[in-house]
Length: 235
Length: 235
DNA sequence: TGAAGTTCCTATGTATACATAGAATTCGTG
DNA sequence: CACGAATTCTATGTATACATAGGAACTTCA
Image: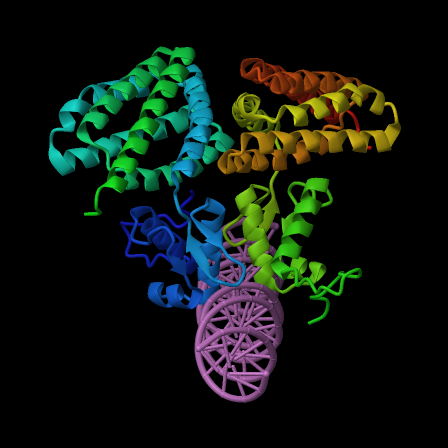
């Protein structure tokens, strides 16, 4: 979303980040990171005390989380971090397919070729990157973020970008739920490369189809990983 | 305070509709109806006094409207009902195409044939319905709502349904902006009929393509109507 | 008369006090 | 011992009081 009060690193300016904004960001990160596990009950007094804001801004934060679909409110019995069932993951991917295929198609029509040529170079190096442990993994995910950002810039459609952002929010939780395995990540890098090349070439049809294939593979991998980890004892 | 327990004349059941919910619904309807025109500035004190709730629930209501995209917040200078430019309408239809085509495709796969057979009968009668003035028009729009509902039920995907609901929210404003003309409505009824038949027959590809065609025609009509009304003096 | 500084006002952000409903617990009775 | 009702407790919903920032207008100086 929009950071109204962006940093200000140069000046020692005390940034008056709104309390509701702080609470929202913290809770959101904690939910996405899994620190607040699905099913966790959030109590206003409890959370406001923990985060260090009053109940009013905390309520605003929770309201935004509910709008995001990360939290569900019960009548009089507190709020709860939403669960991510296998079914809901399938449902999410159904929407994701619709939006990302369309986005890829549009991006191929409107893209700045230079941007996606640069991305192509990076994705070519991605498989090698993935052999450098944790740091390489983080750099890989940064590359994915860069790709998403380039796509958003290319489609230049606030409604579509917003809808995609909503999907990606839940995706972050899923990604954490199903720890990617190296083989899958290497395959994903190749799939991304194909998408990037199609977009760079302005081939909207190929971009859409490559995205379809990628998401199909991604969903299969995610579902398999979750079912496997559910069968194993928790680490 | 005063009328927290409004209505409930029939049953003795006292429904304590939350003040924030009342404020949200009222503001939402007023925005969609155009009573609160685009560009209107909403002041907390002003609106809370007008609607008859305190500032706190009104803030919650406005926050939800912002999440809906119906209201935009400025730093310290009040909130504003968002404008609907021609560009934003095109952008909205871009997302709408992605979602509704996908929804039509899925609905054709999962539908209950009986439901869409019944809708087919109603859409067959729609052109005749449209010759009965204001009442017929209202019944036609009710039919559209029924169709949307049937589609939602068929796709059975909360994420997709939610995304569609967001799109339809803005669509209601656009529909009001560009008053449909009878010729267009009759054409739209035929287009809907084709979609309904495709879904009823389980022909997902045809359902998607028919939806694409329908939305293309719809957008053309909307843009033309708005440009025409912009050229004319306001009534 | 114009421009700049200052002051005041307004609108939101936050905290807290109060109301209320629902659930759980406890006490009483059969 | 079990069942039920009442009470208490807790958590949210609402209202209001207060803090603060940003803008507009007024005044003053050149």
